[in-house]
Length: 160
Length: 225
Ligand code: SF4
Ligand code: SF4
Image (tube, rainbow over all chains, first blue to last red; front, side, top):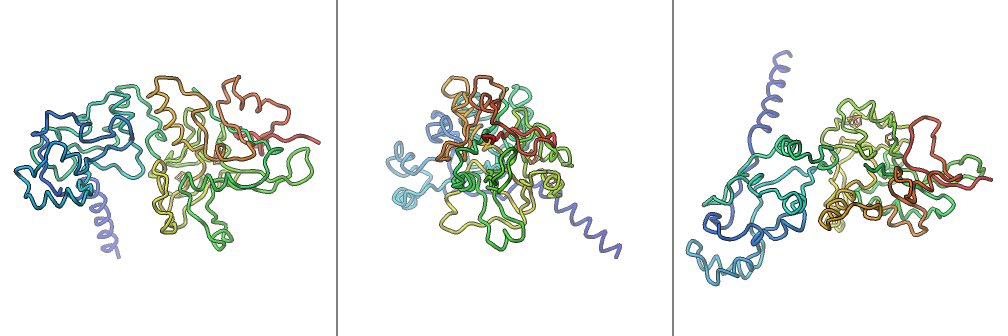
């Protein structure tokens, strides 16, 4: 009986511990996008909405086609053609917040003038898409900045 | 800082329950079946209850939601501070902190705190209609009216984007916006010029079960006999 209890206890601690320590499942993108090569563009050029809405958008294939009339060197022309004609948004988000957290890009980027790198770290310099979020974001990441900037620390301000 | 309050004019209210529907839709409150309601597990942040109002004999349908008490008994008993009185007078619920002990549901004299006995479900056709500004509460936590706090956050953001101060008109909860009889008025109780402050000081004003000392920020209006 005591052994069983001990085993259950250890299993619980291990499960909780690993869920806190290990990052979320890795993300594989359809295209090996090279942010560094696109450094001349502004973030908002492709991620429309970061200045005006809560969510940051991902570019649709049509946005890529504005510059890339034909397939980029690293992408097979057939695959490119298929992405263009299907028109689906194929990017998968790597930086994800829990469902109960309310984060508005407009509030932070346009109004508080926060640099994208504050949360997204060196994503703009990456040569390949990261499998996990480039900066691990926990509540203290937010709170440290909120305290330093004198922003609201009311729980209900961010937890919806 | 504002102290948000709600005035409900019972002489205007027609008990149509549009507010009840608006609240359900706005705050992702799941449907209940007659069986869950019969078991006392009805999920609704606002409901019309039949009461006898002071100095008025006939029963009145009272739209009852969290009274956003200035002295909330529910927050005193919460062991995790998952429910607390925020600086603007809104009694908030932080769902991921809630351990579901239900101390608060028992401490609330208005019985307006609801425990999620089940994982919430919607008909498939309604799944895309959920409000993205409000989380879907999981099984095992307590929820209640928040004065549509998410609307305050949006309104404040919009006011800042426009480069102006937040005004009372910017922030209106869903029930107040919907009421076809215009029986509800919302605003800053600490602003002496606001409509709510004037109405709350009128001779028709009373607070529900105010003798308990909870100091509600929901104020009802009713003409005496
Ligand atoms: S009405 Fe009930 S839930 Fe609302 S603040 Fe008062 S005690 Fe808490
Ligand atoms: S049920 Fe949740 S909010 Fe209520 S007292 Fe317990 S922990 Fe606090």
